[in-house]
Length: 260
Image 1 (cartoon, helix red, strand yellow):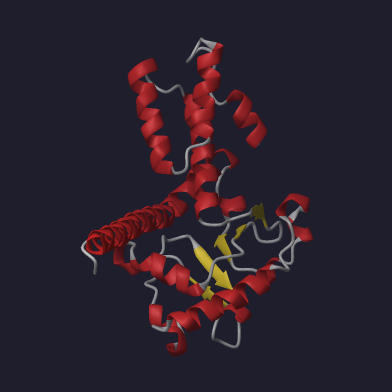
Image 2: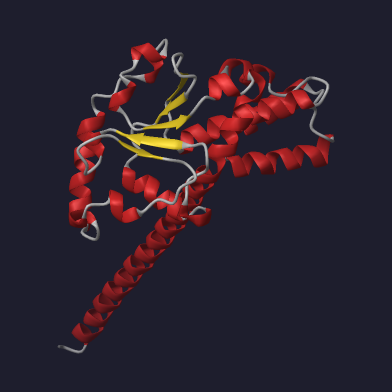
């Protein structure tokens, strides 16, 4: 559980100083991405030596939690009737997944990671299942009406916000039977509960979730950089405008001194 990871992430024998151990645990838990977790792990290796197996397993859980956050997954559970692992991602849309897959090798999602979209989130009459390992055709999932028109995209996003208002809170859910999972976009890793040993399931999930997670993180970083540059450009324009205004006032006072 998250509580167990938070309390016992780093063994006492690895970092003996309790205050420093607590500090490093906090740094790891607050890592915003799997890439940052890798950086932290390398820092630990340099400072404290090789990573013990107990810590490696705990770090895998943190990597998985990071993947879940980045992909908007709020519920993970096993379908007892099929053994499939279901990962609900309420905000995922076909166009998001198609664009993510376009940045993956061969334009295909990882083999073993399927995605199901209920009909209300697609332009089809029934649910759409995108099978892992097969190339995704972006045009199949984006209506021509929304291809390039930003206003239409904004309108569609507003519809999505309204639809998401009905989503149940993940914190109140005790088991998968409490969720009408068929109503939500979701990832599916088939037979995970029946074909993969319990101790290896985190590894199996990481294998299929890490590639799309890295695409999302890269996109977020680019968006942050664009926003930063836009803010800097805006500040420069405002500074130039203020400088120009001050210069005009100064010129006006000078001209006034000559009787103009």
